[in-house]
Amino acid sequence: MTKIPIWRWGRWYLLGFLALRLLFWGVTFPNPDEAYYWLWGQHPGLSYYDHPPFHSWVQGLFAAGLGRSTLVLRLPNLLSTALLGWAYWQICRYLYPGEGADRLGLVVLLGLSSPLFFLFLALAWHDHWLITFAVLSSLCFVQFADAYRATGAGDRRWLLGAALCLGLAGLCKYNAVFVGLGFLAVILSDRQLRPLLRDRQLYLALALLLLVLSPILGWNLQHDFFSFRFYRDRTAGADQFTLNWLQPLGFLALCGLILGPIQTWAIGKRAWQGQRPGQSTAPTSCYSALAWWMFGLSTAAFTALSLVSVAVYYWNILAYPLLFPLLSQVFYRADGGLTRRRHLAIAQGLGLFVAAALVFHYTVIPFTALGGEADPDSAALYGWDSIAAAVTTQAAGLDQPLLLTTDYRSASALAYVLDDPQVLAISGRIDQFDFWYDSAALEGRDAVLLGESWHPICPAHLAMFERADPPQTLEIRRWGRVLQTYELVTGYGFKAGPPGYPLRPDYPLAFTSDGEQCAP
Image 1 (cartoon, rainbow, N blue to C red):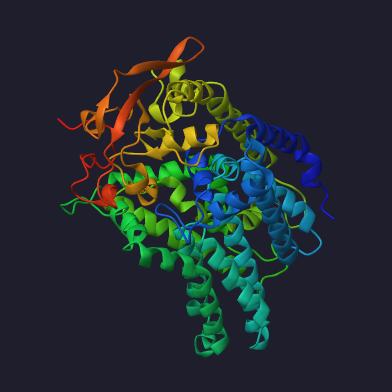
Image 2 (cartoon, rainbow, N blue to C red; image 1 turned 90 degrees about the vertical axis):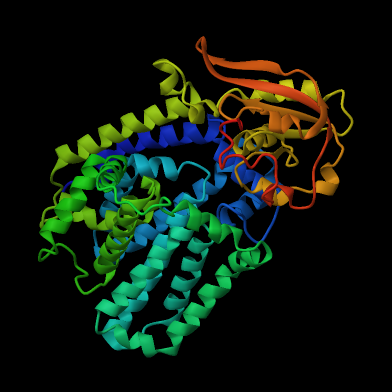
């Protein structure tokens, strides 16, 4: 037993984080992307344009069984968090026999106090399932690989479990590829594991992996590989190849700050000190090698990408989860006593402050609105009950009206608050709505079109109707400050165009890639 159990030391911090998480889950209106993925669940498909399908399949099942509510929307997060906690419990028991409960407590506190993981495990996005399945897959792989190194065999069920969970991670987000690359790097770098490359059970596991991932390939075969093209274009550099040496520094600095200063320091400390004798009672495990390979491969890839293009800090989220159990060694002495408690207290204090600020920002008022004009991304979180009431009132006099907006965010939020999966976005940006666009069903119908200052209603939008009424304006305010100004237009006789119109080069709204400005 440890002399200073982490649960006793950190129980008040833990309760603070849990209270903030439950407040967010139960009260905060869905982020527009949360509503977007909920809407996918109302349109079942093999996969989707922006992301793979697993999260939306789950959203569809929960909504079908339990209805639409904020609690139901984020209930899968609770399940994935419990599953992730179980996986970490197994890892801590495996690496630190006899100290598993205490080490798990430290892992939980390090994870909750990281702004990155507090937010991305709380939002009903794809990431919470991605992280959970990545850790589960890694646990299965390590169990198999360690036995294989010791006996030359290993239990095939662990290898198949690793493939299954890796496939499920791939059905969440494409950056799950770094988990597979980590497995491959461990095999290639360990001479005791290289015989696996000639072992048919490895290829049986690969076949299972491809089978699990087949819905993604099936959707792309049906839709001219649009999803793959989206990620290719998103990560492509400028037309002229140029190197920006400052962008990698900014990317790494932001990654370290969002992960948490103390967590980032602990990673550096752990990497510097290496494996000291007596630190772990499982020194023959390949777990540490796998954790560092995943961290290095993911971080190096996105740092290199930032040299020539855009790399977003949360793309690198799989670099860190396997490191948390290893970071416990930075905070424990060889005799099992807790050390560097000041560092831990700083991490918890900073984490609670940032978590409370995030909940305030998402629930009460955007921080940007306190200093002037709210940024449009944050303003999009507010006022949807009022907007829905205005849209419903304007549509009341129309026969089977279309409900249209100028951006996928506003269309998703409106669809969620109205519980109406038929709301549609028409914009210059390609999104999942373009694949639901049914020209025959839309042709000639009257509509209410919602736009806002971020994605305005343009002449090109109005030209898609035979005629349109003058716009009505709606301001969304918090604490006396205008967060966003919306416009409502009633249009008559929608001209839907030929099949697949939004994906054609002659689509009249394809004047920009994002729809944030009107054509001259």
